[in-house]
Length: 387
Image (tube, rainbow, N blue to C red; front, side, top):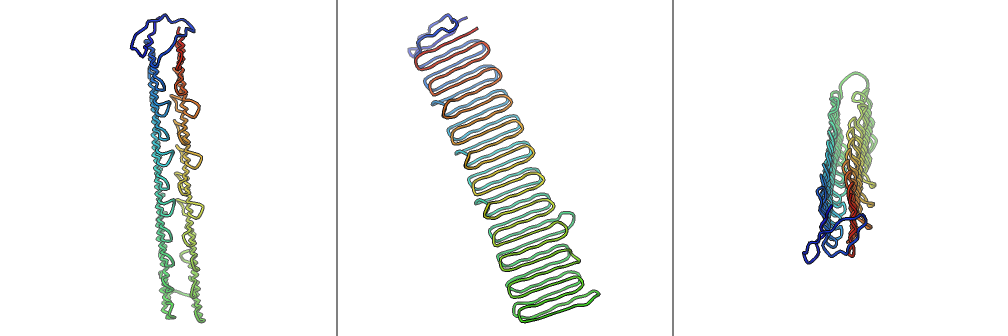
């Protein structure tokens, strides 16, 4: 069997390949057979075999590997990985990430994030300062202390709006509005208006007794269906017919209904529970739990868990696990595993393993091994073993 080694003078030497034969090498090495081609020029490498294509330049700074259904491209701290169900693009050591996996799509750019999984759509800007989440029948929009929540689960309509100290809640047949100390409450049996200037206008219908108590800024109203307490800086409403409890005190608002709605607002901290979502946004970040996904964001750190994806991007690097790919990227060190290939490029070396061929490169040193060949090439020698 014969192999060709090309010198820098472009002269071609035909050598009889003996097991363990070593010959002096020039800067350019070219080994060809029916099944394999290897080119090695300094710290640039190209290896081609059946269903295998590897190109490495500048001592592994730029690498492109294609093995069956997998393609891996790495350029410094950026990478692109395509497998059967997984498409991942990373720029700037995880500063910008785009992942598509079956039912899951994740886009992240610094502290902005967009996650779509099934019926869950999560958008966050400025590390959670502005959030828009849709999960099932629930939608939550938050921009600082401006909050809008809509839910129509099981026919129980909820529309909750808060802007600073002003609150407007509609739930089933009742509406509660508090604005600048003025309070309005309306449902089928009550029309209640009490202003901060002391004016009172109440219309109540239905059976049972009514009890009204006015003491300075303190106002209390009680009937069979309602229990209302109001003073200059707080409001407490209990409505038995609508099965809800509403409390507002300074910067804190609490709303609870027996149909599964639970809302707590403390300045710009928000906690929401409904049949479709658990949502929390506070100084520790944003947390979302839905039927489709668990999402956590803290500034530029993002974690997503769904049926087909585990995604984590934080100070320790990017870690992505899907049904057909396992990827870890930290700075310019990349490790990726798919059904077709094991890929690792770190400070030590580049190592690529497939079912048919293994390649290792350390700057200008190269080793290629398959069923029929074992090739070692460095700046000084070339060693070729062949069956």
